[in-house]
Image (cartoon, rainbow, N blue to C red):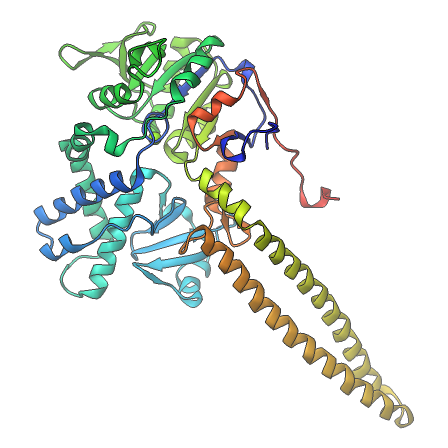
Length: 481
Ligand SMILES: [Mg+2]
């Protein structure tokens, strides 16, 4: 938590690991979904339809064209079991708490048989943690559902369908079918944050070097960056003026561990030429790798802050292998924070009922011991004392049974309250950061690899570029008061 009086929670930067912003010399930014947030409904629908067209071109049934994009079914942080056509929500202890096959929820027994019976290996599944993957997985859900409703129309396994899906998406990226549509009318698909220019300028004024590090290729990057930054502030008319270094086609996450050389983009011909010397501002570089980047800039990992939205592509590898400091942009945070406030009373009520249940549990343990002692007495006592003890046993048993019924009812009530609260966050999957009352796998990854997190890049403008971000004290269960 960061103490920042008066700043609404949705604009705050949250701290997992302490970071002295003053000692950060280089601040790097991802582009798609970080500097340039996409409009969820329009963009995902576009990607969904364009990929679907590829299915039809490849000979899949025409009936698939009737599939509808449902923008609200999925959330990030799920795992995809592409072999069985299932979606999973997993808690921080790798327990599958919720699963869907198409649009049908799996029962507890099905979940147990498939996932919870043995040790769960998250690496066997695909992680739905980027925004680009949302439309892809939504299309997979639709096709799984179609295959279940229309047996024999598609003579393929779920895994084969998923492999085709991946191939068709790559095809869309290669032939530009999605990107060309976006470029025709960027305003339909991309959000232009009016506070972004000031945010970047404040960092520059504090003498931090700014760099762009995106996987998008130059032609697309140029158009999108022009849309979000050209003529957006009186200080600079062109987007390139904001940056000390610009790297496109970076190929993250391999950029963070690979050995690919840097190329310079020759703008006149749109060709690449190998680059070896220092970086020049105003020139565009392509590819490269982080080790060489550190060498050419002369800065160490802990002097670099990288801002990105994709936990796997941007954050895990930059933090994990290079010790770059990280700021994760989580678009969903604004909505989650609003819902946390909305359902705070509901959460309090759940904890009150849990405390009640614990009290009842203790009463039951006490009664259980009494009943056992009573039974032992009756077995060993002489006949004179047996009668009153038998009456006592009956009373105890009665009390015990009544409390068991109370406990069962209370458990049902707590379950219902928790489900109701979760549905307020998302009708199918609940909170992004939680599964029931436990941390989700997504929250665990964020905690492990994201030093800081916030809902949008422009929240950085509320903080001094020299701010010391301090993490809350980390307490282990035995240290709590
Ligand atoms: Mg991104």
